[in-house]
Length: 202
Image 1: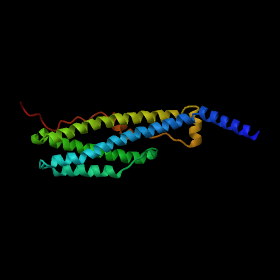
Image 2 (image 1 turned 45 degrees about the horizontal axis):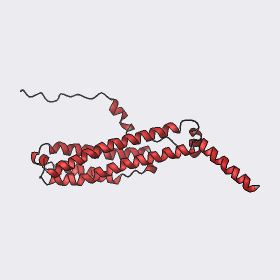
Image 3 (image 1 turned 90 degrees about the vertical axis):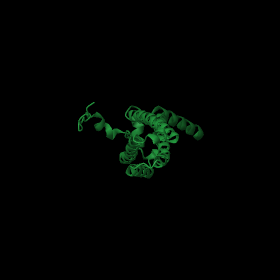
Image 4 (image 1 turned 180 degrees about the horizontal axis):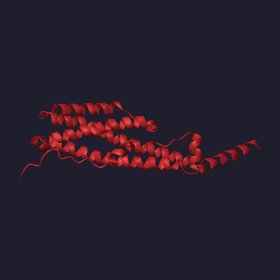
């Protein structure tokens, strides 16, 4: 009799858990973690390209040493800010990670602007290959971030809907901050147009 009661209790618990959204919440949480892992993979790939890019530019005795130093320093900061899937609930950590990545993006943009002034560098096969790899990596970063944003959106919607809402509250699950949310104000602003330098006569 006790064994039968135990089996019935286990079956009832299984039905309760499956009907209250527990399994769906676990699936969505894993999806967020997997999506974030892909974001990290692409950022790591970009970070690995940076020393090669700096070395190839440096080989051409580029005079803008401060730009090379900025890229190297930004890459070092990226390596110091680690954000694993378990840390995604902390908006402050996510913001620090994003700021470090943005700083590296900005310094890489300045490096590319410098390279425009060196025709020999631009025509170098190694530099062109690295630039192609960097461009491909930036595209993969954009795709991975989009997938992560979609996964977080699905998670945040699920924990606000019935019946998952009940299980989310019982387990203490919270909405996850969106990556790039701190840029929303800047993105929505009208662009600043400046005419500092007069056009040169043709």
